[in-house]
Image (tube, rainbow, N blue to C red; front, side, top):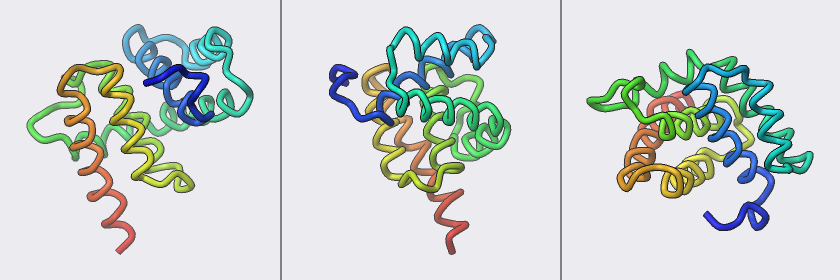
Length: 145
């Protein structure tokens, strides 16, 4: 990913959200404290900070539902075995796909794949794309029929 300053407000919020979700998962930190610290350190503008707060709040509130949906979309994997970074990216994108209908699912998937290319391992982008594509087909397209 290029410098954060060249990214749109939602993309900057997603980048920060990966960090927040990663830290919460890794050290079981208080979500609101981590979120506010990341906002200050990254000097997020109001629009990015607001979207970040929304993402974190919805992801935490609906984590059980998000994790269940992701687990149904994982093939031969358990969610707790997925790396912390990939799990944070998957949860973030699943939150947008399942809970934020104003965000087109394809945008959420594309953004997650880009995040995984930058922050994940060599195979993360393919893995994240496959899981989220499955989640989209299973959870969104089926409910639209």
